[in-house]
Length: 184
Image (cartoon, rainbow, N blue to C red):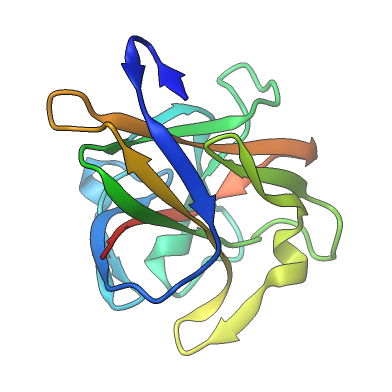
């Protein structure tokens, strides 16, 4: 893949045995003042997004602050858009992206459907948050772990930007949180 004038080699694979090191934790839709602790970790403000808007939930408040805001697939004029993130990957290696979703609006399956893409590859097609909700000791939410992405050709002077797309198919796409891990 060529990005601008830079060449990068990207390979996607299934899950393997790796040691994970956190690179980034993003509380989607949050601001600088909204850093939260959830799922046993500290989450930073929303950054690296290129489209979509912040949406505070006005009903169905989650007991976990991580799910009280989200980035939704809508622009400032109310038009439906694809949510886009470009995560900075400054070094070669393997990376894993984990995404979290909380359905706080629809009350049945197949009301919100969207595709999830990582670097142009489908991670999920017609993803339905409501259908994938689970409850554990952290609350009720849905999580999706992407495939592992191998990057070569990146450096501090020439970082690679991993693209995440949430493409609406029925109603607005939505993402609550994103984790990026470096794998060894």
